[in-house]
Amino acid sequence: MKARSDELQIFVSVIECGSISAAAEQAGQTPSAVSRTLSRLEAKLETTLINRTTRRMDLTEEGKFFFERAKLILAQMEELEERLSSHQRTPSGRLRINAASPFMLHAIVPYVSEFRTLYPEIQLELNSNDLIIDLLEQSTDIAIRIGTLADSTLHARSLGCSPLSILASPDYIARHGAPASVADLARHTLIGFTQNDGLNQWPLRYAQGDRWAIEPEISASSGETVRHLALQGQGIACLSHFMTHEDVKAGRLQVVLEEFNSGYRQPINAVYYRNSQLALRIQCFLDFIQDKLASYAVPYFKG
Image 1 (cartoon, rainbow, N blue to C red):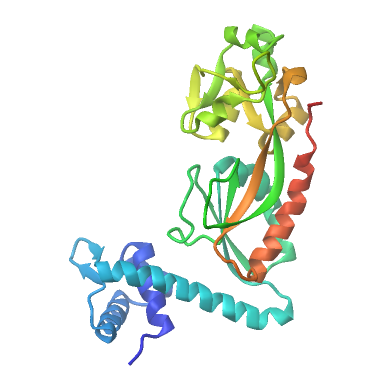
Image 2: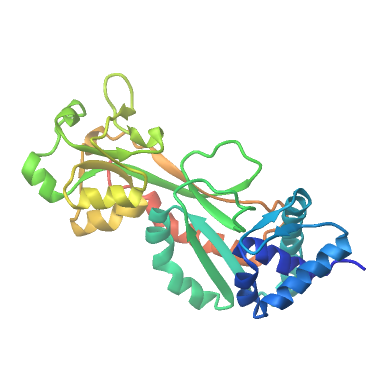
């Protein structure tokens, strides 16, 4: 007797949820029913997939191998079902999107209402992570990556570019004055990043080049934290247009050293695993968000 897709789904759900009881709640079943399904699956495969005790569960080596393949099989089945029904041109199903918190808050969340109006049968699952994730491990359809992509087996679609600007609040400028030159930054409080030294290379032209390395007095791991520190007048920061254009428009932040900006723009890419025709729900989201991001291609500095 061969394993069935519902058994694969229960097995994957138990691992992703972390417990039989949580998976049972998600599936609308009793814990005993889920436990029986796991036992039946292991009997069919003639191997132990999960070592279970009253306190914890651990995947066996066979279980780890089976888990990764089962997720791929379920994803392929979901894609197949969607393609067979795509002639109706009604995108549907769960769409799992991962992005850093600033991008999620400023470039996706504001458009969720419009997207759901256009595609009411797509169930969005939005997850934020400021570090690079494994799409397969996190069951993610699309991850948005900001900056230059490293070599990868992932497929990528460019969504555009976003300029970087040097910014400070009106309150900070009133108290400390605006820097008149790049070298003048040495007398100011600079806000930078803790986990990516590249983000502490500001796009500023000076005698030796067009990337000014800063030593921040205040550092944070998240761009959203850096933004709030700048808004509170704690110092000068370098942030992307997609997360600050509304602040600049409203006068909450002001661009400084505009004439020295080298014009560097951060690439924005959507990455995904599938190398064949994209599932319809993925394709329509990429088209939608790319259109929304088009406005970010216009910088608010002369460059």
